[in-house]
Length: 113
Image 1 (tube, rainbow, N blue to C red):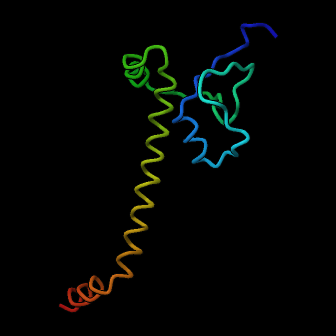
Image 2 (image 1 turned 180 degrees about the vertical axis):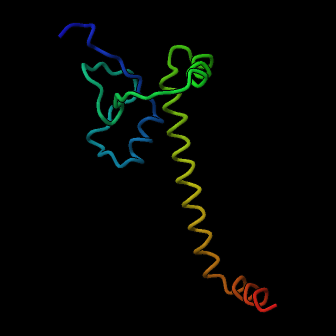
Image 3 (image 1 turned 90 degrees about the horizontal axis):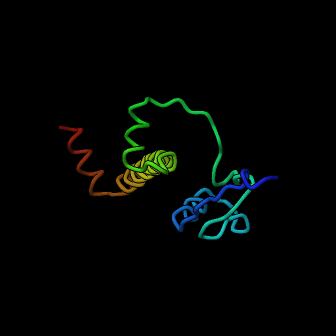
């Protein structure tokens, strides 16, 4: 293999935490810093063709010209995590309300009226 096939991947503490949240085994987690690889680890990067509006690409290139793909990935990952968090919070609230006698009493009164 030639040096042209060697890639450098910047791994941050945030990357490590995201991998842990995906339940990647500790033994498979990379170290924080820059790692050189001939191929990206499937846990860090998975190459896939994606069709995006040119306006979307330009938006991210303006913000992060050198690492716009990383910025797009982070934005998408944050969106997914946010939706999962909101869903979990809603489920927790439902459970709390169903176990709250005062809430249930007031709900019965409201429904009876």
